[in-house]
Amino acid sequence: MRQAWINHLRELVAELTGATLHYFKAGHDDEGYKNFQRLTFLESMILLVLNPNEEDHQKLEWMIHDMMRALEALQHGDEKGRETFIATHPEVIKLSRQVFKREWNRVKDKIEVP
Image (cartoon, rainbow, N blue to C red; front, top):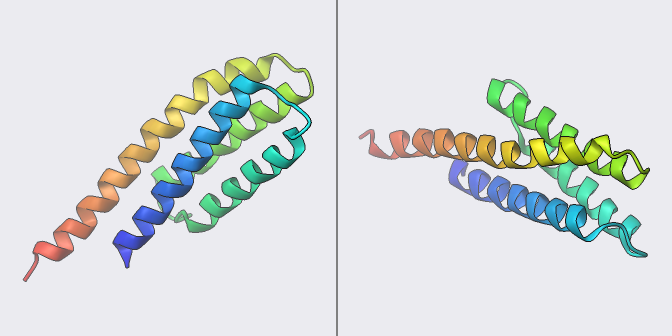
């Protein structure tokens, strides 16, 4: 079950980071509200599957929040959002990889124990 959880979280993070990057680069068109609504849905899904008791999960939650608020700021013409997004987007990916690796090691250790 833990492996299924890791896979689900990985898919959500991949979709969120890919879609936010596209949204950041493509700008806000007529579909902007609908697209942003999907991004906030993904953000919520990720937050619901993260463990609030794990420090790196908490940090990932904060970073995702910062990344999303940066997009929202850009939507309202605040150019500081651009800098924040550029800084946080790769950090979300980096931290996600660390979380996945640690969780995978937990799964692997349980499998190897007789």
